Length: 270
Ligand code: IPD
Ligand code: CA
Ligand code: CA
Image (cartoon, rainbow, N blue to C red; front, side, top):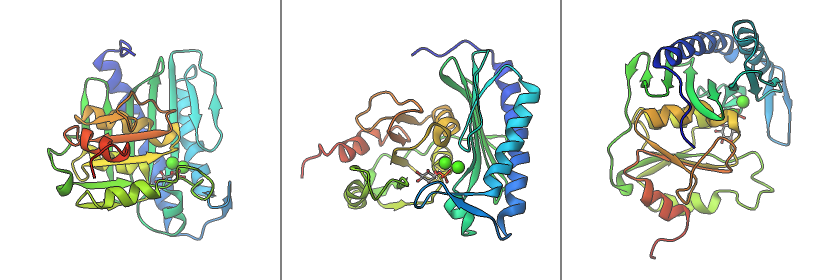
């Protein structure tokens, strides 16, 4: 699908607005991080804290008052049909299991779709005060400084990340086999527990590749454009086009992409 037409000036204004929303939501999360939190369960192991909800409320009300015609899709239930070509795709707290345990890897993720294509994204990590952002054709940055993916060409020297969906007990494809296979090929694999952070750490060269199954649109909307604008590649496991509703994501520094595809598609020679 071709990229929708939007000026760099307009993209910058939208990224600035999203950054303000992410900073505000991040402050709410940071304040709650060390507190005892009310937690309820959406599924067997899928928690939601009162701060997921407070963060979402903050972001949604900010968008509604600034862009009343824009659509919304947010993890904790806020949804609004758009009357313009724009739709915000929001994870108010990515890394909720970490957050609930006071394990300090979590973030706010806000992506913006225009006519079905992601044109801007911001991810804010309140623990490290790191704001990752990107917009169509304006590049990706970390706290205002340009970032690019790593140039590692060898899988055996690559540091990768992955994750496991909440449906791990029931799903046919639970990623455990792929994890075992990839562990024998890469230098190392991490499971940080926040897909949005994984994508940003790939975009900034801290990781060389990332894959996961069954992520949701709000997990990857912002990270997708941040990786792409940092020079990385995002597809499904077989290299086919990825969109935020896909069941599989493979993201890399581009140089490693085919090697990762071979492992994930079980096609390499033994
Ligand atoms: C989860 C995180 C995790 C990933 C899960 C996601 P949540 O999002 O991104 O890293 O492995 O699949 O659901 O529930 O913390 O927003
Ligand atoms: Ca998430
Ligand atoms: Ca979440």
